[in-house]
Image (cartoon, rainbow, N blue to C red; front, side, top):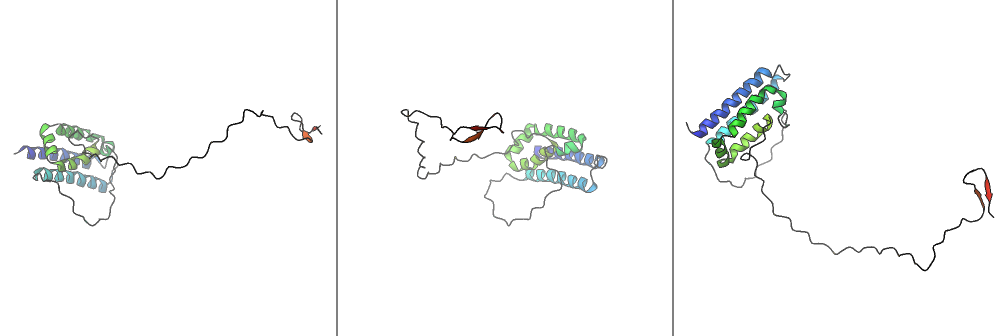
Length: 193
């Protein structure tokens, strides 16, 4: 048995135990039967995808061929980080076993040699609340910096308001003569005329 087969078998045992736990404790925790079946199908597909990508020979990347767009069918499964751990707290043991498997040097070498195995493991880590180790993190391609756009002609700035002339004294404007209300007693009229 090669190390690749050994790693795939270890992952299959971890997920089989996880599926058994979901089936045994799911109804008691309030999960519906169809949701339990969907969780089991999802987990088993992730293991099958990992095993297939681990057995396949490493291929050079080619450009993707254009395909017709498929209708997007939303999954009824939750998407939050560590959602399975929140729904079934007993899954912490499987998360610990998976974390230990991810720390294995043979697993790290397999992930680095075949990136498709990492694509199968990332969703499993996400639903169990495991932060992906460095070998499993997505490689983000750095883009070239954008060249600055050529500017159109510069905008004309409005002229600043004229400064007050120091030659003219500032006067306080007087109110025009006439009857005005007293500021202290509004019903009293002042005769200033």
